[in-house]
Amino acid sequence: MITEEQSAQLRAWFAERLPVDVYESLDPVTVDREEITVVGTIPATESVREFRERTREQRIEVAREAEELYRRKVAWGVRVGDGTTLFTHLAVPVMTRLRQSERQVLDTLVAAGVARSRADALAWCVRLVGRNTDSWLADLRDSLDRVGRVRAQGPDVSGPADSMKSGSD
Image 1 (cartoon, rainbow, N blue to C red):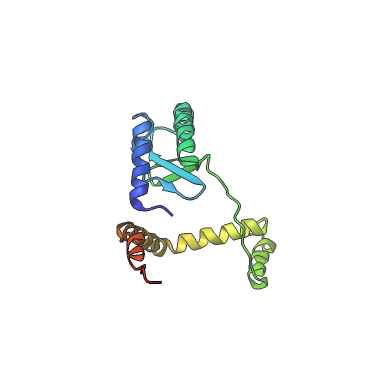
Image 2 (spheres, rainbow, N blue to C red):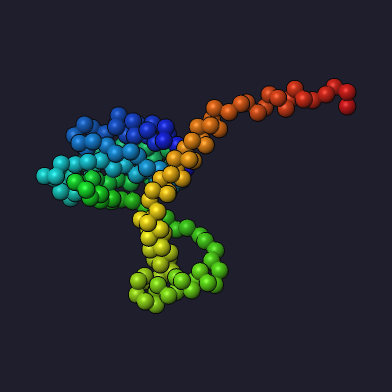
């Protein structure tokens, strides 16, 4: 998890490298261990398809530089009005251990046709929780950012331990 400050720095990095005509405005950049997602607003008069074709070479060039520097894949998206469309983004496998009662939940979703597989059922559950707990997750992420800032401002822990050593062992 990265801090708001790190996200702002990444946003600035992308804003500095993307030509001014790529996006009307750039949203905050989202990052996890595998991927950096860059989303910006485009004019309502331009389709996602037109945007992708018009900006492909520019985005590829910036993505290559970012992937080498940050060791993460870069995903792109656009915001038009209230809608957001992501493209070139990853679907990363995540290993988990589930007890029988939890597997039965997934199997019920598969049997009911809600999902094609256990993996799809688990992804469906995660999306459902995410939609229904957006404000709680946002509060949790804010708290993690605050903890990160406090840790960064903390004392140097290497000094006091050295001064506690006694010469009379």
